[in-house]
Image (cartoon, rainbow, N blue to C red; front, side, top):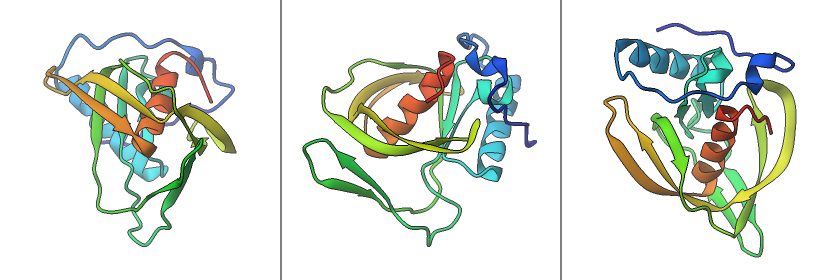
Length: 166
């Protein structure tokens, strides 16, 4: 495993539309391992392959911080009560060729940051829930309804796959 350089604005490669993964091989596994090590080192909770200069549709996400005593994240949904995300142990997740199938009409607002846009944070409205289909490292297809911080994070990272920065 290796820590890779995270591309930062104004690097033009961040505007690249990533291509689908077709080979589920040792090279892909190495990329994913490196992405997790890079994300944890930064530290961050999500990273798209394009952020380390690889234009493939690969995301890694782990909503759990290194510090178990970290303050919980708070999300304010439009028309609803605040939701709290309490940190616990690590939960690394890999999403290959992810697709959003059914975003909710209800929105949630989180203060987002980005490892490729250091020291900038913004309130961003996104669908509060979404159904996501993706492949794992073996090429097996999965589908899951995401909500809260996970829904926001996966949508943020998927924007990177389209060359979009928040």
